[in-house]
Image 1: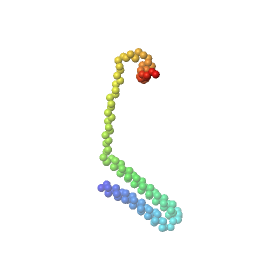
Image 2: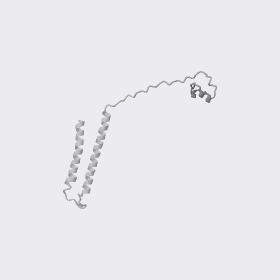
Image 3: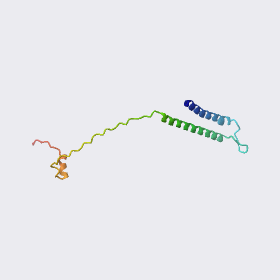
Image 4: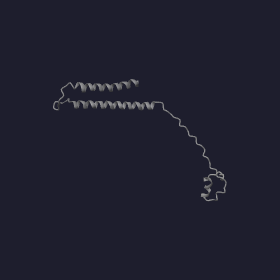
Length: 127
């Protein structure tokens, strides 16, 4: 039922545009085109095309609103897409093991880091 109604609505908008084009451009174009305000004759090309433009804009607005409503209705009635968010498994944090009071604890910071930064040297042969 809605499909037929939607088709009729769009057809009526397009038919209105065609009838307006025939009337304003073709029909009134054949009649005398002089501006006579006292007699009420406003049949000049500028006024004819302005009136036709108003009809076109109004029909375009109606079609735009119709399409907008149809899209909204399709979104509301459509099957919702539910994406399963992958739960990020939390890796257990590695607990820093505090070594029992080492012999370096009594040393100042600079001396404590010395062992970490030093590279072991290989013994070189004397020449």
